[in-house]
Length: 117
Image 1 (cartoon, rainbow, N blue to C red):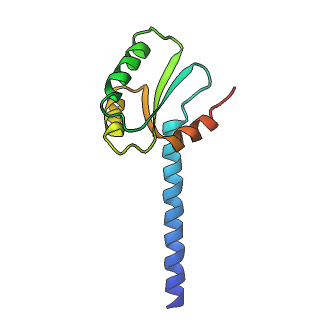
Image 2 (cartoon, one colour; image 1 turned 60 degrees about the vertical axis):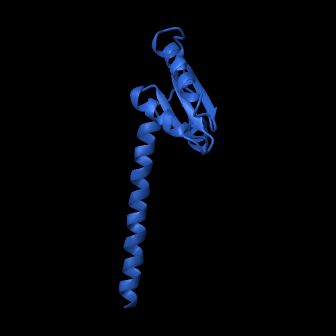
Image 3 (tube, rainbow, N blue to C red; image 1 turned 120 degrees about the vertical axis):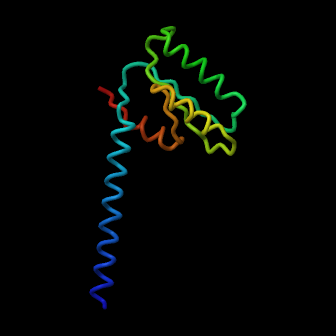
């Protein structure tokens, strides 16, 4: 019986570790394409559902239609909004590849690891 319990604990921890590795691989492959050249517009937002779509669309227009040639990506860092701000931004990020929606912690982690070369 003790052996069964120990094996169950072992396999549970092994599966958890595998899950964490897969999660990190997905995170790295998704969010580490940032380079230090160019300008990244980081927009910190909280509870701005009435204004976020218009603001993002005007910013995307500048990025996509060449008014700002050095602008590489627009990053929306959500500060734990309690309204539909994050959902609206995510909907737009599905339409535009250059728009990323992250939590503030994810944004900070990425900026801390930007390749400086």
